[in-house]
Amino acid sequence: MTHVTERNGAGSGSAEGSGSGGGVRQPWTAGSGRATRKRSVSYADAGVSIEAGDRAVELIKSKVRGAQRPEVMGQLGGFAGLFRLDTTKYRKPVLSASTDGVGTKLVIAQQLGIHDTVGIDLVAMVVDDLVATGAEPLFLLDYIATGEVVPDKVAEIVAGITDGCRYAGCALLGGETAEHPGVLKPDEYDISATGVGVVEESEILRPERVEIGDAVIAMRSSGLHSNGYSLVRHVLLGAGRMRLDTVIEDFGRQRTLGEELLTPTKIYAQDCLKLIAETEVRSIAHITGGGIPGNLVRVLPETVDAVVNRATWKPQPIFDLVQAKGRIEDPEMESTFNMGVGMFAIVSAEDADRALACLAGRGVDAWQAGEIIEGTGEVQMIGQHTRG
Image (cartoon, rainbow, N blue to C red; front, top):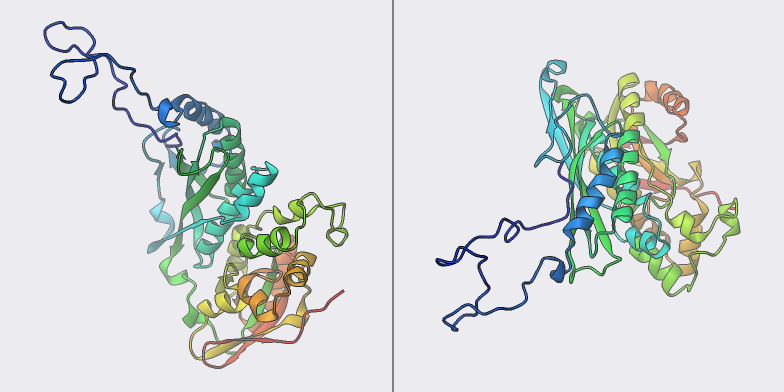
């Protein structure tokens, strides 16, 4: 695993002689014609601490060991991660890859000083895209860029990433932590990840598998997930002047606005893999930026429409709060947020009840939200959400 602070080896080796003296080579100034003594500049002077990076790596190692798979080869600290793919399990294995980040939800985490949940969001955004192709997530590589490496903070972020990998059943194979002084403020960071999965070629979920009469199964989200936070921050924290420590009665259990906004994205990967194994799944849509219409349409052929009935579910209170505070029109809400649904699975009509039973057995709140009809590849949103 490579999970180290960005560094440069130049100048860090043993001292070398200069000229015939055999002593330490002195700095020189262009045009002077001779060596002149001046203070040596270090990487630390530029704002990069190699020692902090090394300390962060040591804190990370114990956490990463909890997010492994038998196929992982080698020890932590190498230049690249190794993963032995068991090709005997497949006739024609196809690799699926996805990369993503968490977006401006990170601003909330940084304001609250809570860093052990956004890693779960990061994993969710990647692995749930992988499983939408029918692929089993195998491993993930993360990237953390920060203005200043604070080892304990980096360890918190990676703790969330390892938790997410365990939930998804994949390994955290490697990563990188880069210190970028002058680009990011000392307390700022951004994170991204790339994941790789595998699927049998004949079992890839494709739009052309969807048929008229299929059932559209919805899986409840845990809240906003990781999309639309620029709008959320604008209407709640900007124009709305709300405080993150404000307790919102509608959220329940004395829950603050900040706690609600940092609710981790639900990871559906293992639930969907089980659903694929037990039912005839045609396609899966991960509901991220673009909302339900913008993502469900991506898994439809041009010969059918998906009819989704809003009356079959009630969005969480956070969506009502954002809409009311921002006076946001319904179409804008639906094109920005998941509105309470994190995943859709399109299954054969005969397997609809089996699919719901499968998901219920895994603790997933799911329901039939619609059906597939003849059409032109569109998503028809009908009905109204229940309120109150």
